[in-house]
Image 1 (cartoon, rainbow, N blue to C red):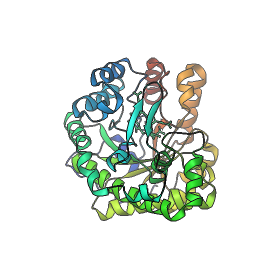
Image 2 (image 1 turned 120 degrees about the vertical axis):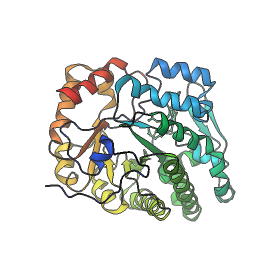
Image 3 (image 1 turned 90 degrees about the horizontal axis):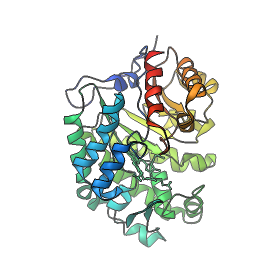
Image 4 (image 1 turned 135 degrees about the horizontal axis):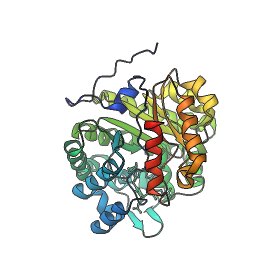
Length: 355
Ligand code: 1CP
């Protein structure tokens, strides 16, 4: 007997799809499946549309082409959910920070140097700047099959702040960790700006048709316990509360990558409705510790999806067996990597649905 939560249906009139059902604790014989970064460079059709758009950021801001690349993995694999094609770094750009895409490398921001640069960020300007994204969401909800749930997303304040301080991804996001220790007041001001801008952004995604939301805290795992509470848990809790205060009722998935033994605390304190597990989380620990309290999502190693073969099939079966009898969402433990053979993704979906 599993407790039913009182989450309402998505804010439109659409009946819940299989992902929404799982997050409302419906136990399905076959769990819903979607994959983080399911639209992306491993698909030849993505590479073609990206070329047509000009560049990665042009693709993000073109509603027609961004919707097209979101549809591509749904057409190919029939995933239970689509995730809006955008990026977590659009928020800093909307706040006035310079963003560009370095070919062959990735997104780059002009690093925030000090409190003055933080004070100059403009929250109210951000909403209009992001209106192409809301148009993409609208096109998606109109164009997706009725049974396919649509996920809106944003980066968690901590993860977005790490990029704003360093200007790029670094091995352990040391620049932001040091900045937070040395300039605590300025860093707190930055987190406050991010909570508010992200709440407005996610609310607008829901208004435009997103059925649920995911908060990506990719860099949660680099924080010691006290800082994890301060910079991952507290701002995520504030974001969830702000969304609820703005009238957003859809389910929210939190993904604090690398949180490990701090996952139960994250689940207990943030108010998220489901939690994403990264590949390093042992299911022999997570299932008895978390799965009766919260809906779990995960956690196949993306590199096993590259390798394929028996080892991959065994790992898929192991995950399905571990969550047997619990509400569960099948996913990777982190995003698909570009070298993934598309036929391995087809094998994964087939295994989850027909084993
Ligand atoms: O075409 C390309 O070369 C761009 C590759 C790419 C893609 C496909 C980037 C650059 N972003 C995206 C899309 C994206 N990013 C989505 C779309 C939806 C989907 O999942 O299909 C999402 C949800 C994100 C989120 C995102 N962007 C995160 C959080 C999740 C994660 O994977 O950790 C992060 C950290 C980013 C920043 C980012 N954007 C792109 C890159 C290469 C990076 C990482 C930069 C770094 O850490 O160095």
